[in-house]
Image 1 (tube, rainbow, N blue to C red):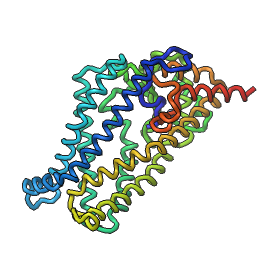
Image 2 (image 1 turned 135 degrees about the vertical axis):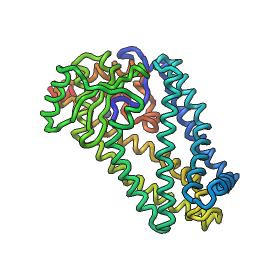
Image 3 (image 1 turned 180 degrees about the vertical axis):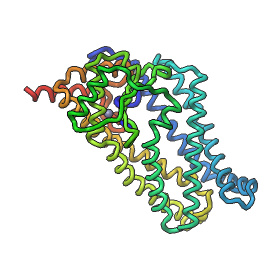
Image 4 (image 1 turned 90 degrees about the vertical axis):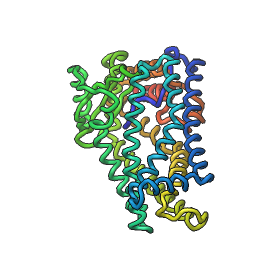
Length: 386
Ligand SMILES: [Zn+2]
């Protein structure tokens, strides 16, 4: 999904050029949690491999399942998924506490626990499906399994992009059609001027969970829609909301969702090739696990995680490029940057966003340009329009 705001943000003073110490602390904490979570995952898989617990788990799974290969794989994968969740649960809970400490959350522990459970069930389902598919292919096509796996993975991604707004997001949030005729008419006018058609505008009931505001373009084809949070509708006036909608429309007009899928397909092709090389090395170089032996799964997870961490700055740069493009679309289609800048400032305050993070932090972690830069770019563009 193409969202309006970068991950989490800040309540600073309106127009303040520097972020408050509170904002900086909040973001430092978030980055540390993210880093710790990633390291924990890598270390866990590393230990399972190096200490060869993976063979222990595999032998246990084979004892439980007997000759039934896919059942053994299911048992083995379940152990890995449960272990991973058990290890990351502490950090997940800490994040929940942090959101409350900075007065950004409206969510009760009970609702959070239920969300965690649903998230785990989803991950369990998709994880098991992917793993079963991969090892089936490794047995059928020892040389070319990774190409078929990549093609199926991409097909699944496209299907999920279609289904996400109608199947996945509603598991965690409520949505309803935006019943503001003036706003709906404005969006229709904007999109008609662009020669584009968005299927609908929905109100995203975010206030049940958080005080933060957001807007996004979701779905593909018939499920394509703009969603806008009730928290944003409550803070911004109609002109500002129109600027936010224009930005989301920019993502639609520039086909950012499709381009994103194309970029993802190139990256995952490389990723699956790396997985193939890794398990070949585990068989011949390390002389540890045959390619079809699912005890090599932690190695695949390790490689996949390392690749996604290393590529994150590249993907973030690509995302920031798309965001700048959508911003410019909003200014051009409205012919003014005033409501856009006002909305940006309000969102930054509401979300405790870092308006001016260091350049390094921006490059490494931000999927969106920081508010300070977005506003500056808008004003610079406006200055060239006279
Ligand atoms: Zn955006």
